[in-house]
Amino acid sequence: MSSLLGTSVIAQIGLLVHDIDKTSRVYADFFGLDVPTPILTDAPEIARTEFAGAPSPARARLAFFNMGSLQLELIEPDAHPSTWRNHLDEHGEGVHHIAFQIEGMAEKIRVLEGKGYPLQQKGEYTGGRYAYMDTAPDLKVLVELLEND
Amino acid sequence: MSSLLGTSVIAQIGLLVHDIDKTSRVYADFFGLDVPTPILTDAPEIARTEFAGAPSPARARLAFFNMGSLQLELIEPDAHPSTWRNHLDEHGEGVHHIAFQIEGMAEKIRVLEGKGYPLQQKGEYTGGRYAYMDTAPDLKVLVELLEND
Image 1 (cartoon, chains in turn brown, orange):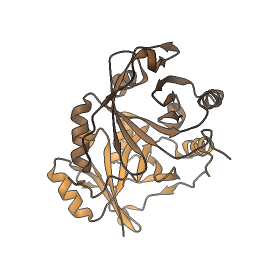
Image 2 (image 1 turned 120 degrees about the horizontal axis):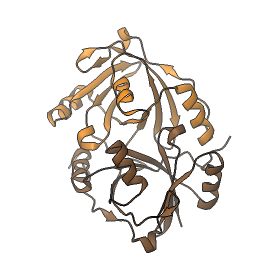
Image 3 (image 1 turned 120 degrees about the vertical axis):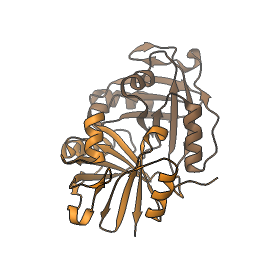
Image 4 (image 1 turned 60 degrees about the vertical axis):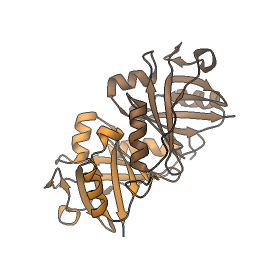
């Protein structure tokens, strides 16, 4: 028996929010952490974001908190089509995904698609790439794959 | 600056499901883990569950997966009033809470209530006790306090 991902270590929990500045301050106060400066995901020509099989100019502001061995990520999406925007519009603020550090992105995506978990969105960032796989019907939460070079 | 909980280490992620046997098998297959045998929360005279300020006979079946330094908990509630049943009915299957190991349950509940986070449900289990605090409006997810003796 082996993990489809090569790991079962949760590296990140991602939550969608409407106002990342406000919610970041609340998290920092609640957990006694520094208020992070949100980062903006890369421009489309770098991020090469694909959502539902098509390129999307969608970007998001992200803020990270270290909470034990994993990160809690806040995500404030822009208005363009993305897994973030759709999920926020459909479900409201709250948990969007759990993420795992993997190796061999293309192969892992192929394996998951073969098991009936479609690719929902993928993109690049400086030093790595990500993919959201639609595991929600089975696992009741989205799985994000993260590969850092 | 200090955490209201005395910690910022996420110990557990809890997900609500309709069919814990089915979803446990899916998780086990997906992550290459053993299929856990679900446990049933204690009977009302032991659990002394209180939901929304009143005793409740609610129970749930629970299954745990070790996924790194934290546990992923699946929760299948019965039909009686509880944070689990209400959340499942209102939001469907998915993440219900993030949990933290704390010390001094009564004091921690008092501190959080003083900050505007009401107690939603509490109860006992062999070797400890738990409390769900309604942090959702601010943190976008419920916080569970866990205290083991």
